[in-house]
Amino acid sequence: MKFIKTDWDIPYYNFALEEYLLKEAPEDEYVFFYIHKPSIIVGKFQNTIEEINKEFVDENNIIVARRLSGGGAVYHDSGNLNFSFVHKAGKEDVNNFKKFTKPVIDALKELGVEAELSGRNDILVDEKKVSGNAQCFKNGRILHHGTLLYNADMSNLSKSLKVKELKIKSKGIKSVRSRVGNIADYMTRDMEIHEFKDFLLEQFGKAKNIEEFKLSDEVIEGLNRKVEDQFSTWDWNWGNSPKYEVEKVEKFTCGLIDMKMNIADGKIDDCKIYGDFFTAEKLHVLEDLLRGTKLKKEDLFDSLESIQIDSYFNCMTKDEFVDFLLSQ
Image (cartoon, rainbow, N blue to C red; front, side, top):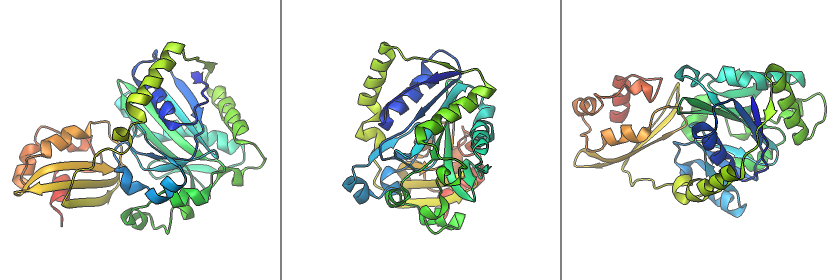
């Protein structure tokens, strides 16, 4: 396994590095860690403005960045250690969170922290979330990355993020803050966050031989261009939400699906799918199929005939998706 040492504290650069490792780097196993300035990281398919407390974010100069993977919005600051694994994988590895979180959980247990994987993609300690994980699959490679709340500012975390009422209801929680915790509070010894990072790397090295992989000047120049052209842009991080008259929001076992549709003459004139689900498919293909379709069961089935809906949302059938679109 190759370890990449980085000092970027702006998320755009680390996300550009993740994309490089997914698409261009020599085929190998990679791991790297990063600590960001106060930031909100939204999932690839989320509607940014609906996930953040924009007034608080603007007042406190909190960075907003969109990552490559699906899932929900998370808060990063100097008390939050993040990790990324990238390597060759088959589709059977997508959504296999147990495989990728095991080395993290094992390392935490070495520090006396009784951590466990819970639900889809969370690591819990004492029933509090200390880590959220997400994945992205491209070109036969998989990116698995996660947060580790070490000694994060919980007040800013709860003030920065909005939690949809539907999500609160589905998880039986009162607020973001009530269900998260800091790892440092459960450790049997004191350790600075950079010492914690070194400890994790040391533990990972017990299972696999790790050597440092240095990025060339040429690669770094390419990453800088990618940041400028994509990852730091308004279009990528905020995007254009269509004007919509109909919104369908429902919590499924695979995550929250938020469908916004502009209806004209009984047809879907425009649509956009948001949510905190995971998918290896391109959502714009599904959105393109729906545009111009009448909001009638037969017409929707005709438009969706060429695809398998469970390849987009692994928790539902085509019948269930159509029922979702037609629900009141």
